[in-house]
Length: 256
Image (cartoon, rainbow, N blue to C red; front, side, top):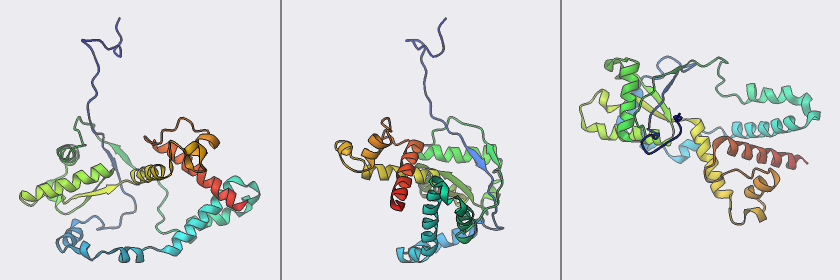
C-alpha cells in the first residue's frame, strides 16, 4: 500500500499559496477613534508635507525613554542576582506606574479565526481579493458603512506595500468602496522586530572571520554554543534569544 507522502511519477504533492486571516477585537478604543473623515481630510490637505524630522523628534519623550532604559537594566540585575530581590517591587513600579504611558486593562483578547482561502496575498490583486473576501463575503459589512469607518489591516511590510499600491491604482475608478480608503495598513510589531533583528545580524555577523574576532558571531558560536543558528535565515525566536542573552551578559558585565 502506497502512503500519501510517498511520491511517484503519477502521484506527487503540490504546495499552493493561500491566506489565513485572523480578526482581533480592539480594546480601550475611545469613541470616534476609527472615523475615516479626519484622516481623509488631512490626506486631501496633504498635511504630511508639514511633518518634519524635527517635529517628530520633539514629540518623543526622551526623559521617559531614558527612564525605561534604566529600569530595563535594573530588571536584568534582578533577574540574575538573588541578593537584589528586595528591590523588585520598586523596579516593577517603574514599569507599571512611573513610566507607564498608555496602560491597558488586563483582559483576554477576543480573536476570531476567519475562513482560509486559496488567494495568493503576495500580489496586489491577491491582497485586494483577500480584503474583499474578508469584508464583504465573510463579515458581510455594508459598503455604505465602509465610507465612514476605518479597518486596521495588519501584516508585514509586503502587506502594507500592497495596500498602498491598491489605493494608488484604484484612484482611477469612481470614488467609493473601491478606493479602499477604509483600509488602514499597519505593520505589526512582531514583523518590525524581526526586521530589526535581521539588520543587527547583517551588520555584526562576519562569516569568514567571526570565529576569531570579538563580536556577535564569536559569542554565538563559541560562548553560547548556538552552532546551528543560520544568520542568513535569521529565524525570529532563535535570533531573539541570542540578542537577549548577549544584552543581559553586557549588563551583568557592566555591574561587575
